[in-house]
Image (cartoon, rainbow, N blue to C red; front, side):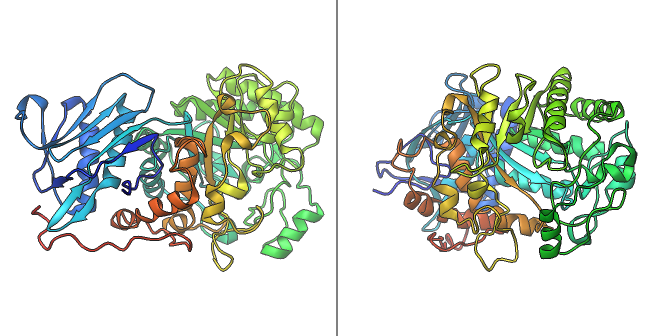
Length: 526
């Protein structure tokens, strides 16, 4: 018999064809007061999906024979794990911890289906736990600014797929997006523009705290990135004395020719798409005074353990200066009580802070020595999770999903189909780096072409679900569910749920998208 559709694929799922659990208005959720967040999440999820409003009860108030959905935290098992048992008589979601309960609730929401006269949950037993501790998405708010409401919507969409980190790319050549008391000129003078001459913007510290709190309530940790020492043209608008003159290579001129805009000029806002031309002044002590202020304030604002210092595409910085800079700034980040994170180029630094985590953005089959650079992070410090995988030709969600799409780019080996986003395995990307040395997987979404939440939705979904499966589910070959055919069927079955949640996914070819026959005429009866 066919198994119910769950994405990402769980570690274990069993169904025997028994009678389902019938949902109706007033079906009780039995949960202790201290897990009210999980109760509210389930109520919202069910109401959005079905229109039904469920009741809530404390365990002591629930009759032993009552049909109910029971939420509980057991405290045993792997972190973030859960068990879900559905019978005709009851639904029990048991999380090892609050995060595991939250993920069990999200799985339960995916299982809800229409039935004659109402709604039901198929009888099933799921035992589930994540493959990797770090499961991230990145949203670039620098190329195009995205406000609090948009970021919160993206948190909702991605936490439901069991992602647990939100990497915010806060600064780049086109704009500085976080208000800092120590350096107010950064947002006063360097936040007004975006790619293509579109309006800019920035988050106040209250905005940033609101995002952090909202993410935390959904078990996501915010990872702020201040991209250094390149991608720093915006700094020149506020502090031109800290910035080198742009390095205008033939490559930069080609991008300007192909995508429009003007060549970058120090101290003048830049709204083009070229990368790699900017650099801070590496040997000027004023640069490090600036970074002590900036990184120190970002660290104080951010409760999570990570501080991303960039390090990619620093083509305007000599190799010697880059090596010096990365060593010094990675140690600065560590001195602030954070684990530094840097893009894989930083793996070449000879004095890299040993706690630094690398982020690989090369291809599934690495070229140009990108894998050797990534291995630089696993060569220092402990053998435990030191590398995040973000292969650009698989899970860069800003790549075009088809050749005719007005959204997205194609530099990462052309069009990235949903199938290509799915058919790769983290342990097979960087030779010599196995699961135990991988911290996890992250799917970035750069926003050169993404101006709105609708653009983000169209680019990210369904391919974000493929990245979620690489991050959460058993390795390819370790589960019968870990095939493209299985994934296509399961993600296609999410179409009615996503539609009810207002997610504007792109119905890519090759996926059998479900068209749901409405439940009974009276959605309040079952």
